Length: 497
Length: 117
Image (tube, rainbow over all chains, first blue to last red; front, side):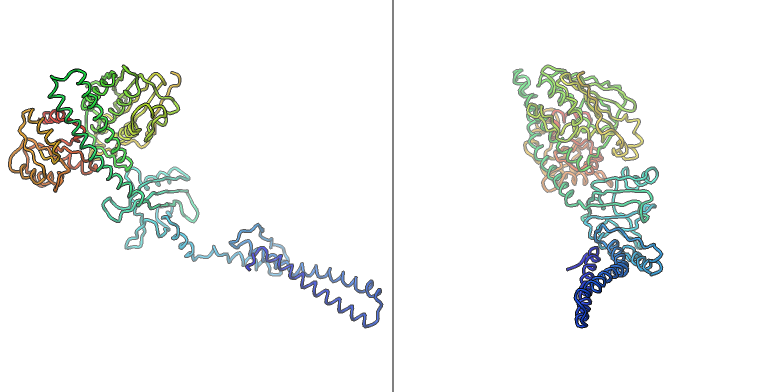
């Protein structure tokens, strides 16, 4: 059975005590026999010889043992302290003169000098790092790789120089973050999800989640540690699920096209023969079909957004023209649900940078909400104006309003308040995707509301002239104009009006 | 018009003819390509999901960086397929309009055609 270092000395003392006691007993028994053979009386023997002799021997033994075993005690304490076994033993004090003279100090120092974790050979450390199921990369103060493990996405060039094989986006790269951290922080952490190591289409592509930790003047020259977790199987499945969604959307859209199209044809051809109430029925069919189409779009856009693929092609456009493309549809929706839709978007507003299809989806989502959550006969007002470098559009209703407790959850995916879940139809995706689209335009979206009095949703879109050069540089993609420091949810909520 | 769905094809043909347009309707990409190159049309309505050949391939054959076989013809992509953004943007560069069928009605389509001139 293995003996713990910390227990060695106790056991050793026990052994020594047993041996010494045995020796004592043997010596004294011999003396007893001897004196008996020599004819000395028992009493004299016991009182004058045996008892004092025993007492002296015990005394001497204690002194000798203490002296003899002290070095052993200190050495076992030292070894226990430096070993990997957990212990509460404190290291012995070996700085006394007698230990220096006897050489015990040097012996104990030798033990300290021979600690295993001070050897320069670190193959044990490397093999442990290689067993870690994620990639680990260590960078020095110059951002150069000093160490990495087997699972790290690192490639080595012909000069044996290692470099990180990860594709960060230009606006949110590791280098940008590291530069900011090095220049202005003592420590920092950052997380990037879904970072690829190769471009899409490469069959060996992997997708990682990356966590970085920076600490200025870190130990052993390591300032930055990166941890990469291979999530290819998980995110790869997401990509497959989006392909499924694309196919499903296409299938759903077929019948929707036929329903909307033929209703439109019937309405125009039967215009003169339809009774007003029949016309109303067809209009309701139309509204529902267009809503269905909107839901399919929302689902598709959310799937694209989740994959960070919501790229827009921004063009110079007028907000009034964007609205005009859906004006008839929205008026129809309002009319069939007995709401009054008032729209005043000045046509002389500056042009904006917009993706007409997506932006009109945002307006349709917000107007739809305003209709849904207002009372019968209620008004929905759509207005727009200039605000700094943006055009802001307001959609106001005087309906049931939003309690301040739910206001901060409004733009979350699938969020539906418990009240409306049972009484109002909807997917909970409309506001989520509207926020995603508006932010992808470089704008912001927000809501303000007074319960029982109504709500006002508004969003901003950049004025074209202010972003034209950035768009031209980015080939009209929206990446250059997305605000990186925009508030997550801009939300004003008045309590009690 | 290149459209393989019978209901949808008949719907557009009916509305366009009523508006006074002359319509040739083909149901496959190959037939569409043959028709487009045999006669000069004012407008081609091109679906993407077609049997045998995708509308994207037909578009590429008709109009690419090297040559334009139909310089005097406008092209409207009319599809329900949700392409990835890169493909869609590439198509939008070459066509005059890119429309999702489920989002427009025949009357709306005619409005857009008339806007294109």
